[in-house]
Structure formats: structure tokens, C-alpha cells
Length: 289
Image (cartoon, rainbow, N blue to C red; front, side):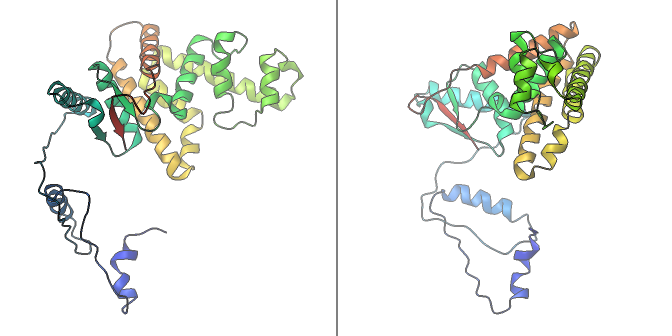
């Protein structure tokens, strides 16, 4: 399996190996490389290497320590706003982040600051796992699993086989057509179990904090187990869901009736999801990993 010891002990394991150190960097400025070298030096278990470049020194770097992800994102948006106010074009600005789930706070900050932006990749609230969770919430809160009304058909169709329950397209069409009685007994039992789970979600939404209800959906549905068994991609999807739970915590502390808080959560998520997709030629800040 992957282990850093494979590299650190390579010369010991292969004493005749020739080591070629690649230290010249062609893209960054020396200012950035100096900072990178100082960070890397903190790692005592590494093969020695000092990066250098023939490029000019470049602008000085800045450091900002935010109180949380929202504070950090607001700083980034305000910095972009200041640059644009000084005459820089939005398309000349890029924001880089480590993992996809981190785009959520940045998207919200740029939207609140009214700065045009484009996520290079899939926007947070457009990611499949996020839309699946929101569908669970809407369906459970509004109807507890009945699929007869058109308003809930999309959400029901979305989550009926998420995670996999062995419910195929033909079975789904029979359910939506009101012919559920034609299904085998085992399939009807699966649907009954799903609707019972949706009813429990609704009860949780009515009595527990919203973030706790989302965590219950993640665990009770089997999604967390499926993500953990899904390798690197599954881990990334799980991080996105945890970011959604983090987003939901802001509603936990709000005053008001539970139903109103759930509605506000769904409306805010829909608002961010419905932002017009920017095309490549648009003059907008780029957000990307």
C-alpha cells in the first residue's frame, strides 16, 4: 500500500540507485518558493531539497488567519472586491482551495458581495450527493415519502435508490403510476421501509436541530457507509456532505418554528443552486481546486 517509507527508505533498499533531485521551478516566483521552503523545512522526515527559480522575486505574500471558514471566505471576497474597485478585471482573479467542499463558503461570500464568479468544476449545491441530501429533506418534511403528487415525484425518484436498494426504472415507473400493488412482496417491503425512514426523518426535523437531522439522514440511509467504501471519490463526497451539515448549523441557533427553519434552509440552498451558470467568456472571478 502507499507509504512514505517507500520513498524515505528507497536508497537503503536499493543502494545502487542514482538519485536525481529536481529543484528548479519554472512557474513560481522566488518569494513563493522561499515561503514554501520554510514550510517544508518543518518536516523532519523528508529527503532534502531546496526549490529555486530564475524568475524575478515577485510580490510579497500576505497571511490572513480567519476565525472560521465564513470569515475566511468573506476576507477573500472583500479582497477581490477591492482589487476590482482599483481597476482589475474579475477574470484576472483566481481563488484556489484544497478540496471541493471548500467552495461552498466562497460561493456564498462572492454571491453576498455581488461579485461575479465561476466555479471551475461543479458548484457545491449542484453536486450529486448534496442534491440527494436536500431531496431527502424536502421529501421527508413535505410528504414523508408519498410520490403521488407531481411536486414530490422528482425528489422521490432521486432518492428511492440512493443508496442502492435494487429498485430499477421499471419498478419506479410502476410506483409513480400508482401500480405499486403489482410489485413483488419483497419490493413492497423495501418501499415500506423507505417510507418509514422518511417518517423518522420528518420527526427528527420537527424535534432536533437541523444539523442533527442531516447527520441522521447520512447515517440512517446508509450513505455514509457507501461513501466510506467508495475509495477516494467516496471520501470526497463525504466531505461535501459534512460541509452541508456545517452549513445547516447556522439554522440550529436561530429562533423560530422548526418548519420555518427547514423552509429557510431549503430556500437558501435553492437560491445558491439557481445562480446563473457563467460561461467561460464571462468576466468573472474563477474559483477552483
